[in-house]
Image (cartoon, rainbow, N blue to C red; front, side):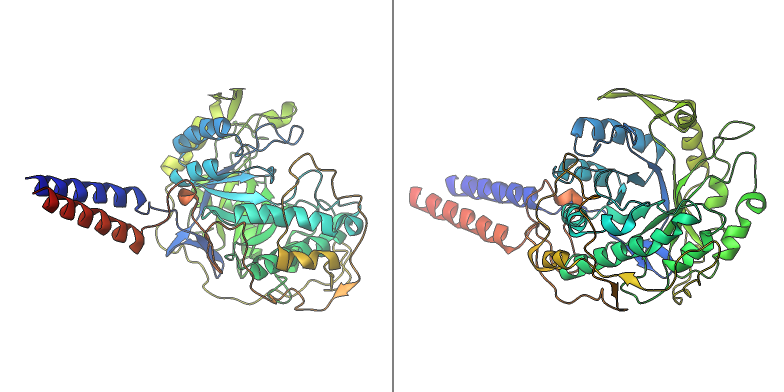
Length: 459
């Protein structure tokens, strides 16, 4: 009896031990195929919100504070969204728990790499493109590449906001090139990198073409723009058809990184949702993100909010919350591939014109000091309290030849917990024991044999 009891206890202990170590389900990584995103083998459409409690004036990291992120994830689940965009994070903090909570809710992160102090200035693009700046955004990549629900990185947001500022485009594109090269040299998975553009009528198409032209190392993986042109009541023909038609042969994914006009006659009804996920648009667009989750800013901006923050643990749902929730419920994500294009060619680079002030296709060379990060890693991020990079001064040594952003080596990084070249550890694995391998079985057999031998001796 003692042997049987020991055997039963050993089997129970082994089963419990193996169960504790068994791998948990992870959220599928999103990749780019042709002009669409795919989560595993399924077409992925963004159905989400722009998320920055505190707004631009009080930049804070909502996923470094577990009280805040858990408060808001409850609301995200009610909405039924799958993506949040965050404009500012603190790269000196750990994000494991909140990223895990997001992953468990089926939610991906679209992340802006820039912060208020570490970004390209549209009035001083050349001096603000330097190694101090690149170190900080590379450190952000180190932190977030390890989570499977990191959907994509924005290399810039609305730097081009009129005709004169179109001359900043080469610097944004250089950052895209540098980020792709850094991830490749560090052996990280290919997280998509691209630009979030302002919806400028004069040069919207030139911007889209520019970020998708040239060699593969400098081309964006996607193009997004912030579009407030659909103001209820409206229609596809009235608001979107010219844009969709103009981009119908575009070869990389497009999505709306902000949308949701408040300048309406009827109030915001989210009437664009059925069209955004309908067959007139899905061959070109891959969904979008509603601006914005929290009520922020001045009187006009406050009209965009879906919730109002009452405390770190409580929010009040505003009328637009239920309207957006219902719009998503009434319009499920499309089935099938949505008519995407599985392949396509790079765009032709636009020529200089009265509305596009870029002289040629050349990009600034990466600052020489930044190349050391490929081998050694970026090091720790400075967070939101650093001195900033915008006044460090120009370090680029001229124009880089085409193809200069090609991956030159595949390194390994201590910042990637258990990741290897071309892969990453899932967010849901951040707080769990390692995946089940042969070691737990060996341990279980040792316990089992010890129990059997012990029982035999006692008999």
